[in-house]
Length: 242
Length: 318
Image (cartoon, each protein chain N blue to C red):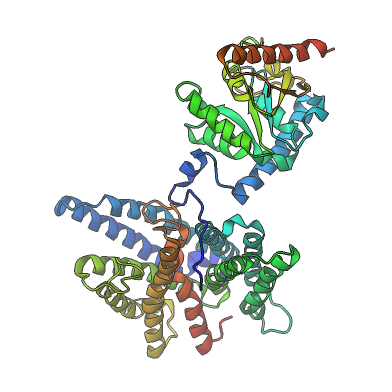
């Protein structure tokens, strides 16, 4: 009789907290269930409290891998972008989250890993490693990466410069890059405020772009970052709230 | 016949409250003596002990809360214990199989919770269906490859799922069904306390006198000395704790001692066989100092059904 091969989980010897901190995380029914439930509650909350609406929803209805790029001025931004995705794709959608902020304290870790399915992004020291992790994820079809290339929440509500990392990730790679603009999240829940205010929030999804033919040198990378920032700001101007 | 009001006035339950409290204090004092008196290295034992400080009151609280919490508590332990088994054996990658076993475990819980079906002697729990749950769970597990029209490699999944259900879901589920019995507090408190004490005794005797390996290819740290010492303690305990089942005759006390003393060791060893074959040390790292949930409940898996059917042979259970 041939011996069985046991395909054990990779994190057997880790404690529960370490298992949440690890990335990629092993699939877990309980986590998937809680995440779906959380997403339903968050969607209802956004609709009711922030009168959330999505413009250009058809631009992210695809089964291929996506990189979603957006402006960032509030914790609501991630929730809005996730609310635009179908529930079943949530477990393959990874918002890049600062590992120094979201992956240290246990309550934040729990929200980041279970509710948001965040990817720990070391924004200060191991940027290159984090980027290569993103590249590995994109190699599987159906992966959705949510990236805020400003690197942190804006304290003024204005979109800041985009970091070059986003250019390095998408240059020369056949993946759809979707610029998005989130309007109103700064008024609703700015950095430093404890609880959100009941202000209207809109998500404007732009048309996908592709940077497969671009070079991966420094000039092109920063050009892509600038172009994406331009695209995001343009979405804001053409859909000025009325 | 379990509820917080009854538990408060039940002499057996109250006795176990004191016994557990005393054991925890005695254990702590012993460890403190080892550490400061004999200057022994005890950090790993401290972690194990600290986990006991949480687990023991929690278990008492669930039993105190009544029949329904006890059955649900056993069901949750079985679900999370099985999850550890599934993650270690790779069965967890197959969510349909895992889901079928979960459904089976919930069925065991529901059969234990049900009230007085017609056609059976009155009493809580549907005994006939409870002992027949493997029929339905195995049928469900075998149905899954048929439903998804796949045969390649399915036998491994089916086998692991059946072992997982029968071993962790159903055999361990007998502990929950004991909550339906006339002497629920005595039975449940005794077998949980005696089995855990049996584990501790095996560990202690092994550490003190252990020379000859019990099963060298399965679990190198277990020894004949530890096993026999634990059996001795378990044979003595029914007499000391006779108040838990005052109606037991001498022969039944001997059987109780044998079931706990031998069944506890066998449960431990069978989980070791599974772990050894998979190639993992612990099933998980959920409980600090103990390993996984399954590493803690493993000895109860043999003891609970054997004890229940032994008692059911001599006395009406419900």
